[in-house]
Amino acid sequence: MKGGLKIIEETKVESAERAPKKILVSTLLLLKPRIILSVAFTGIAGMVLANKGFPSSYIIIFGIVSLLLSAAGAAILNNILDKQIDVLMKRLGRRVEALKIVGERTALFIALLFIIVSLFISFYFLNFANGVLIVAALLSYTFLYTLYLKRSSPYGTIPGGLPGALPVLIGYSAVKPNLGIDGIILFLIMILWQPPHFWALAQKYKNDYQNAGVPVMPVALGTKYTNIFMLLYSLSLFPLSLSLWFLGYCSSLYAIVAIIVGIYFEYVMIRSVLTNSSYGKAFGVSILYILVLMASLIIDVSLGSANTVLQCTEISRPLKTIP
Image 1 (cartoon, one colour):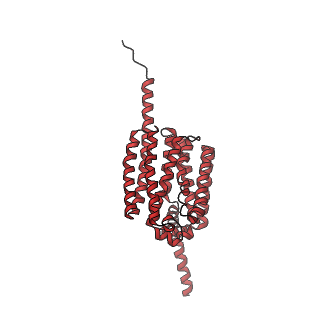
Image 2 (cartoon, one colour; image 1 turned 90 degrees about the horizontal axis):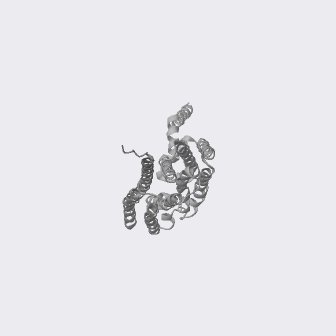
Image 3 (cartoon, rainbow, N blue to C red; image 1 turned 120 degrees about the vertical axis):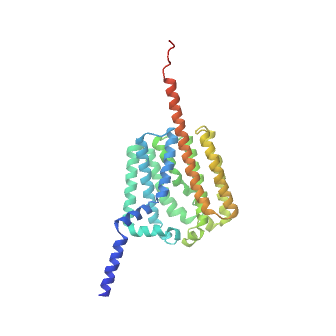
């Protein structure tokens, strides 16, 4: 009798754990919402740069929906593929629990559904180049980085930055399939930004990665060696970010913001490296840096486009005849 009651109680607990609301919340957690929203934001920056202003609502809606769905699908796949690693890392405990609540099969179904819909939108409503770039981002993140580079090399973060940098090109290609110099520069900014951003996180959670057996640079090569790479990459970002202004793709407004936020970013990174501390702050500031940089780019290019339209309107306005 007691055994029967125990089974009933356990069933009730399991049912409560898989309540619809809890499943929904857990699914959202598996999507890594903060990451996919930042992916969408960088995609918008690529669109605005390619169009020299905000593109049509058609491009924005289909471009962003496709990008969000592909990023969400990839995030869920990452949770599934990394489940044996994540369970050994304290900071990812909620994510591990979320996968248990949703169920691995359900999560896989959602991920594949998101990816299929994303690719359909991209190839059918946008263009071939956009679809190919989304496929490249999915494959490089899921297979190249998650299954191979992350688990095998302390330098995996460097080529592993490719899928994180591709969203700017995905956004760019939604407007202009033929890549320009401005798009390449924006892509390179993301390529250089990601390693120090991740290394700061890896420094903070070094023990977590060590316990999970992930050979990130701080674990495999040490803190000092990682600090050197953090410094080199973060310092190289500053002149590259200003090249958009130097080559005439942005105005002085962007340059001023890039200089101010760039100096603050470099200060925090250098201080963190020299003191072997505050890696959490360095990680947070790196996010602030890239978001402000992209926001200033969007605003600057959009204002430039608005001014051009205004000037053209003034020029085309007929002159009043003198009575």
